[in-house]
Image 1 (cartoon, rainbow, N blue to C red):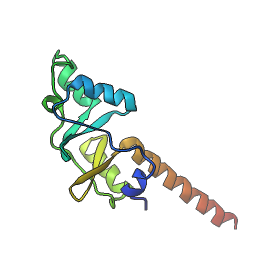
Image 2: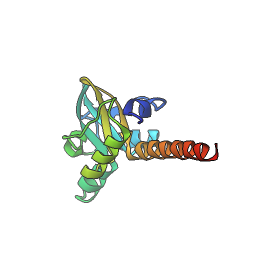
Image 3: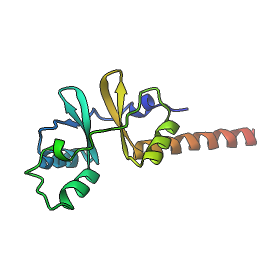
Length: 141
């Protein structure tokens, strides 16, 4: 069973932004790194998450301007988190049940990464392909 720690292996470093940054700056950062969400860190403390969904629902739909708002005004402050030893299956269950696409990974009091729904699906597909290969070898042996 694959863990969050294994999913994080090989991923780029944590992409984060300050709660005092503008929404425009957060969007530029996300576009630069081609990600759909960023962790919001106040110093090194997890303050929330800012995602494309936050932008669409809290900025665009209300006719606000991204250069006039801070991340803290539109971010999701209460964030679900996982630990490095949690399973891929546990992440999928949490994401499905709570309808979230990104989970910060906390190791003690530090955010060490983020797993996305894409990471989880990729890991599950890899596990399934491995099992299929093992079963095929068993059957043909």
